Length: 542
Image 1 (spheres, rainbow, N blue to C red):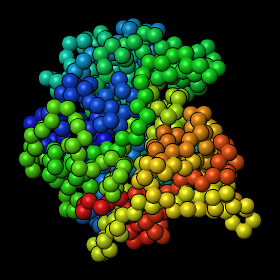
Image 2 (cartoon, helix red, strand yellow; image 1 turned 180 degrees about the vertical axis):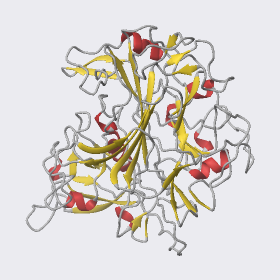
Image 3 (cartoon, rainbow, N blue to C red; image 1 turned 180 degrees about the horizontal axis):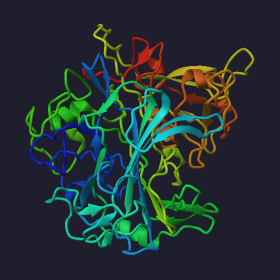
Image 4 (cartoon, rainbow, N blue to C red; image 1 turned 90 degrees about the vertical axis):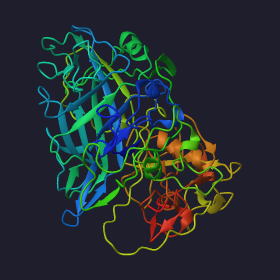
């Protein structure tokens, strides 16, 4: 949900010692309370479920270039907190109490099995090929994504909430590091395990470091569950007989958000929020919390507890739209969405067998929750230019976007009734067209249809078993929910969505190109602006 030198657990009065990347509510000012979190309006949180407004954060990732002189923040990220427990062991698992918080590090006692890094490439059959390590690692090789995961401890002393101690010694890992392992003496309460998984998309290799310049990794958790909801899931979410643990030791895939059997929802514990919420943009972070750059930094990163610019006093009790100068998709204005940096998917999972915490998570788009609620978005690629050459000013934003014949077009293809393509006003809510989505890599229901385009491109038309005809920005959100994106003009033209359903081969389909990808004109870009041959998001002068 944003990046800033803030730490609501350690210090509520001034800047934290290093930059953090946050996921969940946009309430991440240091002076944030449990009440602030649970009262966060759903439209100001990247959490996909209304009842869970927990806040998660970790040291920001930076790419280091120019012989160590330039630090470029990594913002093309996804995250998933995986909740796991085992109801067959004692002490029995219980929900996090109100106000609970904790910090976990890969160097903590008992955390030797809690950490892994994996560098993964998508394979032609929709799977993944990964190299993994049991420590934080930024490999030199490139891969489709770099996954970083840390499982947090589960044994609690039952007394401290993590607010007045050192925020760590009220928790301990089980004696063998597994979810079902014994708790050490003095820790007679068991809480769910949170394995926090972060994905760096389109990992390019090179030199990277954490914002705290450490080689160990840590994660912070501030409970924002509505009281009683998680306990209800723990007590009452049952797995089905055909759901069994796999060879890796993972829990049975009990989906405690909603479970569909024979097209009927039989279990539903959480309310999905089905609207895409962008993170707080850097402009708003600097205006509302601390006025210092954290995206591209030269010389050295901002560090030092209570050092640097003065913390701005928290100016709100409840988040409202008028707090933010940017951050929402344009409706009828020409404001452009800044880069989507982080999203959060909550996956609740129960166990009836002993489980481990070291098996790598593969991809967040294969979780068992029902779309669109559990879809993790493919965030836009942030610009990481570190040269000092002068670039041209962004072109003027355009409201126009391309809609293209759903079967494609060319000399050997019959045109759609409305023609091969049109330029239409994407900001006019009366302009509606059909929706088809694309993604790199196979997933259930996605089909490879391209004539002469990237053979790893897959498309889908039905999302959550529905066909859609809607506005541009709603189409953009729908593909986000589905775990993909809107297809580009060229992808539709090359018949990459032909025959994927809903009878849309005869219809004009919304298209756009993601930020950071090549473009020839403004109308090709999701943001409506093309600069120096790439779709641009940065119109705010950063």
